[in-house]
Image (cartoon, rainbow, N blue to C red; front, side):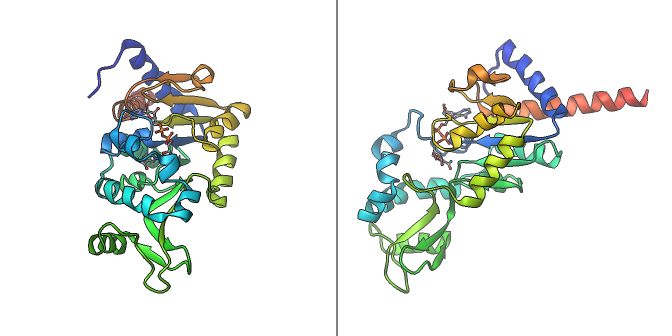
Length: 268
Ligand code: NAD
């Protein structure tokens, strides 16, 4: 558990009040919310992305030229990614959804940890690591089928059983467009939202980093929970530079406290 500064405690209380008042809140999450589940982000101090530059190993052009590079990286990161469990940050957001205080979670993550935590309305703008398809005939494969292939044919690119073309994950690689439905839905939600709660994103990956700008232009407020500063901190209503796994549950706790207090007062 991270220690909190007095100002952070004040901001957690303010965030709880804003979320309770808002009729239209959406959440935007990035890789930072999953680091406490053991999945490294791209920008933190972490060996894996130093070794495999995502822009090269996760780029569509390099993938089409030589998919083996991507699969070499995947073999190393897959066990971690597949076995990860949601942390207190994911659970807190799922609870906010159950309390009907958020309309949707727009996530850049591909790890499915929001759904594993119980959240239902999750727009995965960069796809999902649990589905795979063939580059040639589009046959689809499950995570388990891919794991079996990786185990059986160690060190080689998994191939389609039907047409032998290389397989790819259903994630958006660098250089590819976002899926249309998720893209337009998240832009629409961002434009209409009264509040956007941003958790664990450096806000540097385009075009998703524009979503909070739509919210600001529409007169909405930003609450940013990230352990490093972002380019929108100055424009945000509240910035809390601490761990999402610490801050988000405290916001939920504060919301519950306010609700109980209001209930007691209304019964008096
Ligand atoms: P990012 O790596 O650019 O930024 C993550 C941010 O979170 C950083 O500012 C970091 O300081 C902060 N952070 C790290 N741990 C934190 C914590 N516990 N609490 C609060 N802040 C924390 O991530 P991004 O903005 O999502 O963009 C990078 C791209 O990486 C995305 O496209 C995403 O698809 C992909 N990615 C996804 C995963 C995943 O699915 N878990 C992991 C790595 C990368």
